[in-house]
Amino acid sequence: MVDKYAVIGNPIAHSKSPFIHAEFARQTRHDMAYGRILGNPDDFAGDVHRFFAAGGQGMNVTLPFKERAWELVDERNPRAERVGAVNTLTLLPDGRLGGDNTDGIGLVRDLSENHGFDFGGKRVLLLGAGGASRGVLPSLLETGLDTLVIANRTAAKALDLAAATAADRVSGCGLEGLSGRRFDLIINATSAGLDGGVPAIHRDCLALGGWTYDMFYGDTPTPFLRWGRERGAAWALDGLGMLVEQAAESFFLWRGVRPSTPPVIAQLRGDQAYSQVLR
Image (tube, rainbow, N blue to C red):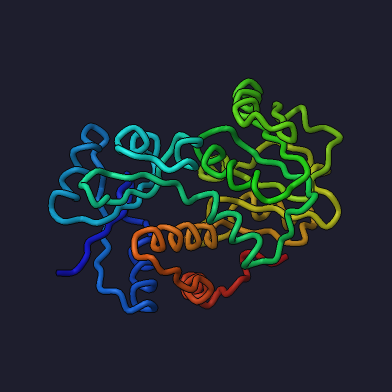
């Protein structure tokens, strides 16, 4: 019998996850099927339990269900426990559901392994204090960065998130509190780009030779990607590589083998190659 996997979200028709996992399965010669499930906001738990009752082995979870998946699972690994969100569900041998979060690993691997960014001693700015930021914080703090500032339109949320890390090198502030500060890497974890906007930060926040990274991606450059280019970023990257890398970690958790990600990223970009991420 073919092992069954899926991604659940709402909306979900746009998801590239079925293509990504089909490519991983082809690479590794694993016999598996991967589909999309349009989650019902009023019956998310029912959707998940029905999938696993019908023979599902694993499931990815995307917006807006990651926090609800955290509440639903029977067992969470430490990184999922810390961030309060789950994006990978696994059927455990005893029939219970395990939860993990691979978003942070995806972000760090894309930056460091695919593009050669060295986090050591760097000053990093994380824009936004919502679920996307929470999901990547533990992995960022394991990189050897020097300082991490979380900035949010509502300062209190950034301050609370920074305090929750209990790390001396992490601080929080409102966007106005960034005046006069310079960063080697600025990561956009806000949804402002979905409405065509960019977080209101000063152009001088980006240090000379600094990088910008938008956790979101699209068929055309995101507003934050354009913001980085216009301010002379050494690299202005979108989140497509993060998507593939977090999927690879999920695949590893399910199948015990780590697929090669660069060919899949190249296929998704198609004829654009890396035109969206270069200056």
